[in-house]
Amino acid sequence: KKEMLYKFGPMGYFGRVSQISRGPWFAELQVEDDGLEYYYMHQDSNGTMRYLLSNNMSYKDRTELEALWSGAARVTNIGWFLCSFVGLAAVTKVPYFRSMATGWRFLSLLGVAGASKMVICQYYSRTYGPLIGSYFRKYQNVGAADAWEIRDRKREFYQIDDSQYMAYTEEEVDVHRHANHGPQPDGEAKDNSYLVELNAFLDGKPNALKEHPRFLNYNYEFIDKSYPSLEQAKDLIEGKQ
Image (cartoon, rainbow, N blue to C red):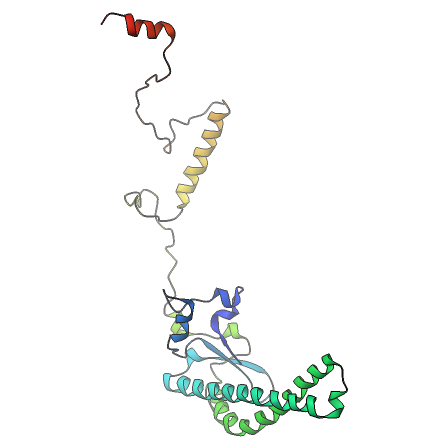
């Protein structure tokens, strides 16, 4: 069985990285596969399930293994298709199955098709089995029984050094007001203290809101734009300039 690397995450299929940046959803089907980031699951001589990551294989070997694996999967799918007709013929022609209820006949169809498919798998495994097994034996030193124990040097090369993560202050990035650098540790502290002073101001308690660095003290001129009283209107109309 073959699985994408990103399917080991908690989000499964929806948590993987998209292979295309734009276009319709079916455009991803046209992306050429490089054979990387595939886990091959197989059993060793002791019957233990092991994983082999294609990133740890050479380009030539992983390309050839991908071709063999795809060929075996293609034969399996063809076997299921053909054997489904064998199962359909069995449940419609054999009197033993024809006397069954509909549900049991459907299960019998799957059983006959599965048994017939196993015969086909046993036949083609004599060709694909030794070839695919040779690659697993060749790279058994880089495989592991636990998929999380596999080391991938290609991915480790691109790991981001986060030793200096957020190792800058808000004053250093204040010149880039047009960009979003994300929340800064000192900036969050200033925001929290400003909210404390603002709450005290709204509650009528002693506060230092105007002295806070976050307070924007804009200069303004108060203009009364309310409707004039009757006296003001009479003076405006009859008054002398």
